[in-house]
Image 1 (cartoon, helix red, strand yellow):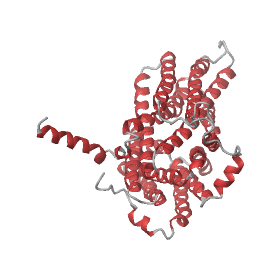
Image 2 (cartoon, one colour; image 1 turned 90 degrees about the vertical axis):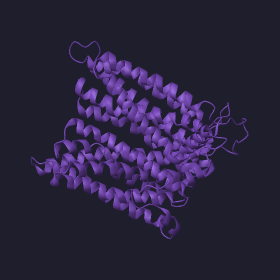
Image 3 (cartoon, one colour; image 1 turned 120 degrees about the vertical axis):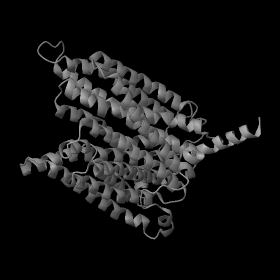
Image 4 (cartoon, helix red, strand yellow; image 1 turned 60 degrees about the vertical axis):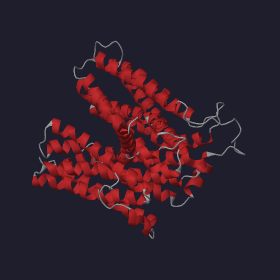
Length: 472
């Protein structure tokens, strides 16, 4: 091989670690290809989220004419399992498998639950589509089957994500946790984006049969993706090698976890910040249409812009925290960025400047990514080795519950303000919700202050805005 070819190969080999923010997370024992394969469980989770909240949400309301209130209840059903993520993580910490695995059995059970939910979902949708006096089955059969399918998918998603993140923590050293978090959530966002495009293309000419095919494909892909993700990932332990002297109870472990350094405050920060960013999720697109008069295609592009902001945010957070910044400083900076982001959205209406609205959407995604990355990385770093699953489960339980409650409250608050105001203008309803989000962000920043006080070194290396490090 000549000198010119060697130079090209050397340059290409250095491009990955320099421009791909998660490439240098790999080690000789854990190559990047193995980490990318592990992240496929997040792709399956993203696919399920898009199918439930996006595709089926619209199809059930528009094409199947299911009352929106019932659809809202069904979409909220997966949140029933969110508080149990701490229990799932606890059991994955202490599980004694005959095959020597702790995390893999839980990820596989979650995959089976998700597959089962998708398997019975076509029956539910076909029954819902055949409602009326001439229906062969009562309407309640469709509603009950749909609720069961949503519950199973939700249980699968929460189990897969909790045990999967715990497995990623087990496999990587603490110094790599920031980049692991970024890689896993980039995989989630990419899974959501690719799934949304694929589902949209497949259902461009809608029919009940085509919808059933899409759901069946999602069920099959769930098993394939998670089987590939788990293949030869978790080391097998000899049975009884790490058996505890006594079987710990969840209550004892939970009390020990809560007695840790600011454990309850850290969970409260996760809940407050997640709710602050999450309340806007279902209102940004309606705000663009109602107040700014944007078209459907224009408001739909907000999802992509929000996702781009999240991708950039995760990349920046991975670089910054990996360089030594305190994860909570990064999380605080994300909360600080959220305040001007929501202010841009608010002032875009009276100024009639859609560009300000778009900039606000990008910053909301960016700030939310900094906040989520910072709190999750801190949880991974501070979790005792024997409580990794419990700690990540508690983070996930609070995060998922706060996001769901925030979305539910945002719509209710907007409607309540409009009903009390009794005016043709809808601006005040949206502004009230955005104002509450800004207040929650301020409370989050205040609550995080004791965790940062006196940590001057970390604050010095943390970013205070969306500036990207030169090495990115």
